[in-house]
Amino acid sequence: MKYHIVTYGCQMNLHESEKIAGVLQEAGYSSPAPMEEADIIVFNTCCIRENAENHAFGNIGALKKLKREKKGLLIAVGGCMVQEEGKAALLKQKFPFIDILFGTHNLSELKSLIETKRARKKFVLSLLEERGETEDGIRPVRTSYPNAWVNIMYGCNNFCSYCIVPYVRGREISRREEDILREVEALVGEGYKEITLLGQNVDSYRGERGNFAALLDAVASVEGNFRVRFMTSHPKDFSEELVAVMKKHDKICKHLHLPVQAGSDRILRLMNRRYTREKYLEDLRLLRREIPDCEVTTDLIVAFPTETEEEFEETLSLVEEADFSSAFTFIFSPRTGTRAAAMEGRIADDVAKERITRLVALVNEKTREKSARYVGKTVEILCEDFDEKKKMYMGRDEYGRMGYFFSDRDRIGEFVDLKITEANGISLYGTPV
Ligand code: SAH
Ligand code: SF4
Ligand code: F3S
Image 1 (cartoon, rainbow, N blue to C red):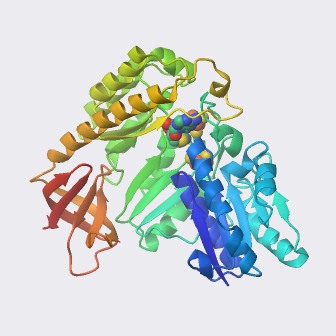
Image 2 (image 1 turned 30 degrees about the vertical axis):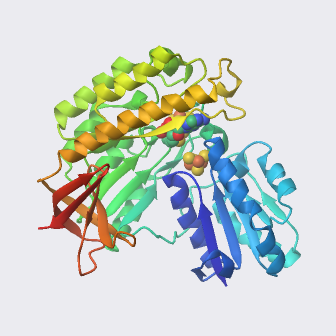
Image 3 (image 1 turned 45 degrees about the vertical axis):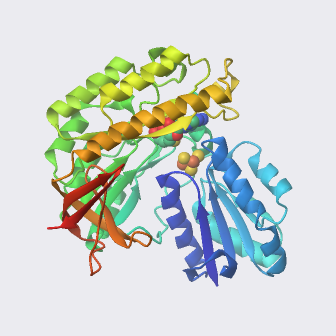
């Protein structure tokens, strides 16, 4: 028996799909396969923005025919969308052929849900209000060698006014430091070269011995030849202690993803972000004083309710001042149940589109400028994949920049020094030296 998993959303969800694969293998599904050949198809959904949901709705709907034709095929839908108020019922109503609906708080239960479904042939549903476990018992089937994701915490307590994550992922809970360290040691022992610590809000980590900085210090102190990354930090929790730990360890990538969201203090307040533009810029100055070549990336939202043209321009000027190496940009998407969804002053679609087009153009221009400066330099990349289209190997440097090169032997999992000969947008091209 074979499985197929479709994943939407963030790195957290990608890693969750690796855990789902682990549970499926325990349940007797031996290996992954294309959708048409699978005996179970699992959708791991995301609901952060409306288009993420529409995507999933479309793809699940498209399975109706396959489900009718293939006897015994199971269809399971899990992830954040299922955890959203009323969405499980809607999914079942729209797609009666779904066999299993499961939430985000009880992954390890999936095995028994599958068994129940197989035995009773009846639809099964499992949703929990709050997380009951830290998933330490699940062995993920990792698919991203030489990178490995490691959860350090789950959930979020921040309630940014636009965001649905706290509603679908529940309250923050941290894994035990010992369990995290043991997992990292095992991964390094197995040859993984990059460990990414994952949390909706890593700065809120609370372990037996201390905060996130202490955990990061301990992880980076594990013996071996590997890099450490972490996601995501919240500017309100930025600390000198974290910078000191980043500075102390060569293993920690000189890259901080620090979502700022907006450049206007009034909008930041409406977003419930709990920092100001000036405080954010001040923190970046401190970071760069201590680690001059540290790269910063960010997330930005345009067209938050009531955002004026001037306030949007403050986001543009912040992009200039903060000197981001790249940014994810989004149009505000109202999510039912969040405070922002109930706010007046929605921005018209055409205005929102016009703003994001300008923002993307600026971000791309900055990224290109930074890329151009790479030409002639040598950077160390961790080779992580082979690009079938380009017929080139690829990997990222510690700043997160993607580099491509030709090689007649497999270099995946190796650190490669690349002399950069060409820069194109966000991608670099070079030759190994
Ligand atoms: N916990 C992480 C990830 C949150 S989701 C963090 O706090 O950064 C990733 C990004 O999606 C957010 O940083 C934000 O920029 C964007 N986002 C979240 N909700 C959104 C919404 N309703 N509309 C548009 N963008 C949203
Ligand atoms: Fe959402 Fe804010 Fe939590 Fe990030 S910190 S997950 S944006 S509520
Ligand atoms: Fe991630 Fe989407 Fe859920 S961004 S936490 S999968 S809502």
